[in-house]
Length: 155
Image (cartoon, rainbow, N blue to C red; front, side, top):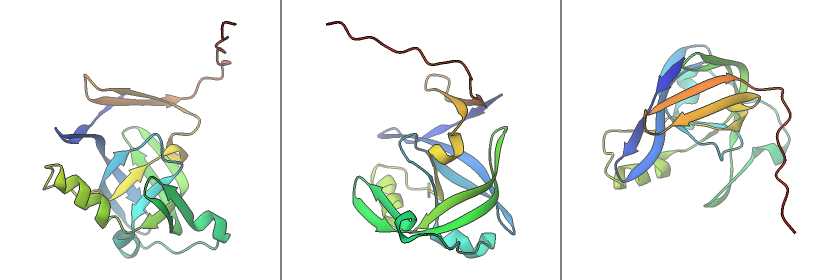
């Protein structure tokens, strides 16, 4: 089953979706699909609203690395996160201030959109993800157990 998406703006083709995040409460959130992100990131202003509690993890797990450098994040656990027909339970997420990300999105012309979350590889692991840019749909299915074909280089 396909899930529709939209771009943040014509000038910023970030894949935006609506997800349902559940802690003590369930809330619909605007999220960016980021296949290059290792884990999922939740805006820190939603921690209290969702009733999430800080997990005790090693300091090394609290460091997030990105294009802008590294930053210390909180680590929480969502009871569930749903995108379309795919739900992940007991999903660890990082939390951080996302105002700078939203500022950059607004500067691109998307004034009315605020990003609440980034959906990364921790959500998509062991799944097959197809992003169809022309149809603006995402399909998520169980991953294939077949061996990946290796590409041989010519000498």
